[in-house]
Every structure is written in structure tokens, then in C-alpha cells.
Image (cartoon, rainbow, N blue to C red; front, side):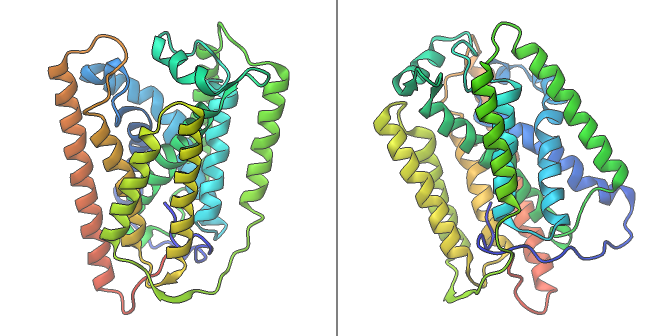
Amino acid sequence: MPSALSAAAPAPTPTRRRSLPRRLAPVVGLFVLSPICAEYLIGYDQIIGHPRELLTGLLLLAPLYGAPALLIREITRRTGRGWPTLLLLSATFGLILAGLVDQSLFNPDFFDDPSWAQERTPTLIPSLGISVGHVLNFLAGHVIWSFAAPIAVVEACVPDRADEPWLGKVGTSVVVVLYLLAVLVFHHELTRDFTASPTQLGITATIVLALAVSAFALPRHHSPLTKRAPSPWLLAVAAVVLLAAHQLVPSTWLGSAMDVLVLISLGGLLWWWSARKQWSRLHTLAVGGAALVVNAGLSFVVDPLGQVSYTAKYGANTVLMLMVLALLAWARHRVRAVASTTPAPQALR
């Protein structure tokens, strides 16, 4: 999530020679965490109660979510840019997925469950074939949970490498190939019975291009404010409240208006606070961690699609929540350990 949202990241520093496991650890971590946050954490699907299917699904979902997360991060860090670019690239890849690959933004029968129509219909714009509520939910979901939050958390686990590229030419090529294969497979499987109109696809592609261009049109520098950044704990509480509100607003026009207000408030607060002095990686972790905690917590009250044993469901929810808390505790420990050896507080850009 944003760290000094109004500024660019410092130029990547030359990487030190590290062992292969150390170089691969954050890559594999992000490759796996991204699909878990995108699809499993909130526990909406019936496979939440089937551990074997969860693991099998992860093999398919990791290239679809983890590969673009790695590419988003790699592009941002290699170009010396910061979180505004990263978030716009996240929106770009999120719209590609929802609008062009699986076309869930337009498909009225994407899920064979009555809840899909119940959530889609109240804010449906028939002339465009889209639901405003779904647009807000899908795009915010991809930006926050599919990409930005996992990146923030994994970078916090390796704070000494957070501003460095993680992939070489071979690694980048492998990730690109995995992503393209996943796109082809999921597009083929999920558009067998429905294909968006040429107009819908054309408008989506135009917006995707505009988002990608905007990601690199942002200014790189800013003048830091003199006021101190708030406590990471206060930031985490604010993020939990606003992100939970985003997830819980009703699927109505009033709910969508409230959702827009919530998302603007969250973005505005982060932009304002992250420009203050002594904003650190702990603040970034606080926001990314809050996103993970919100969905892991809401999973206990989400009713999965299909028939699921409640024992298996709550067991999976509990395991995922404990994993999230352990991961965040480890990330916080790593950030503090590295910061203690740094002469001055590290302000992320």
C-alpha cells in the first residue's frame, strides 16, 4: 500500500550477491501470497473447506495473480518510481483481468449462484452492461488485495531488498510466459458461454491503455511536509475501519456512493499522511497488513458459495487468520531489525 504516495521510490540500488534461496524467497512469497489474498482469504468459494482443492487451485491461480504482482513490482522498482505508479499498474492489470480475461465485469451469469444477480442488478447500467457496484468491488479488490497489499507485506519481510529489483532477464521472461499462459487458459475456460461485446472490450482496452500511460506520467518528486506521520498502529486502525466499510457497504446506489466516499477518504488520508516526515516501511506494512486482516476476519461471517462443512470452513478460516498474523508479526520484526541498524529513519518513497 502507499508509502509516500506523492513521491517516487528511490532509484534501485545495485544488488549484492546473495544465495539462490535468498534471492528466490520474496519472489516465491509474492507469487503465492497474491492469489491467496485475491481468492482464498475472504473464503467466499466452496473450496475453502477442501484443503486439497485449495492447493491444486493455487497452482492455477498463482500465475494469474502472482505473476502480474511480480511484474507490477518489478516495473515500478526498475524505473525508480513509487506507490502511485504501482497502484495505477495494479488497476491496469486488475482491469485486464476483470474486463478482458474473465470478463466478469460484463457477464450476468459469471457465477451460477443467485447472489451474483442480487449484487449485480441494483446498480446495473443496462446500456453499458456493467454494474457500478461490481466495478468498484472488482477494481478495488484487485488493486488492494490482489496486488498492492501482498507487495507491501512481502517487501516488509525483506526490507533490505524492498527497493531493489528481484528478477533478472530469465526470471522476468519466465514470469511473463506463466502470466500469458494463465491468461490464455482462464480466458478460454471462462468465456466459453459468454463474450463481451466489441464495444465493451474496446472501451475496456482504451481505459487499460490510459491507466498504463498515467502510471508513468506522474511526477517523481515531492516536497515532504514538516508534520510527523501518525503512529503505524493508528494508521492500521484507520485502514481496518475504512477497508471493512468498503467490503460491507450494500450493493445499492447509495452503497456505491458510500463506497466511493470510503475509497477516496482512504486514498486521501494515505496521500496526506505518507508525505509527512518519518513515514517508514512500518506505516506501509500497517496498511497492507490491515487489508489482509480485514478479509481474514470477514471470512468468518462470509457464507461460501455451494455446500461447505462449517467445521471445515471455520477451520480453514482460522488457519488463514493465524498465518496472516504470523506473517505480519515476522514482517514487523524484520522491518524493525533492519531499521535498528540504519543510522537514520528510513522513509519510503
